[in-house]
Length: 220
Image 1 (cartoon, rainbow, N blue to C red):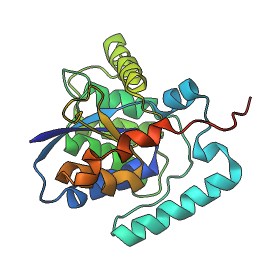
Image 2: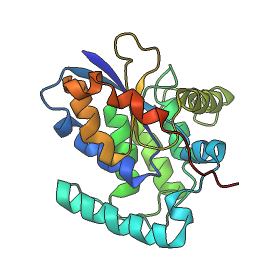
Image 3: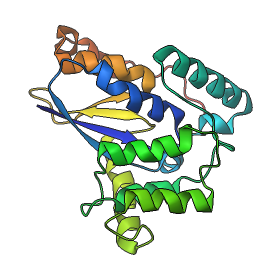
């Protein structure tokens, strides 16, 4: 089975949509997924970017698009009472689910994503967070230094690999390569699935040639 890493932050509606559709997109392939929660805001800060919900017209477009995408793929999605919100409590809860601190299982991830993207309630409501924690029964204290450190380390690892957004699907390096192959966004899911199936395009020159285009203009 091919190992896959699914990097995500529950604050992202695209991560939720990709999570829900991934089994269908990868149907027929032999794979095993590790789920890695990571702080999206940390990636944005490192690369000097704003999130889509921080740019007013892009924010409106994002919510319209994800509602349409959800309708198209048959996924239940209701926008939370307020967005964006601080997802740290949810990320720490996920990181606390298992002793290794990095790989919650699919059911645990599903519970957190449904907490945010189904029902239209406030994702950071204290009572709801308490009820969610009771369902997940984390093996470690989500507020412990060890859990917080494991989440920081996940962010550092993600940046070192070149992640700049969520969701990102990480596939192993191809033969003769040292770096994993990264596929960003809900709309990168089909491309990742094609790579997983071994379509010949991914062994041709285009993958590497795309990174060799010189920048004509750079804004300061």
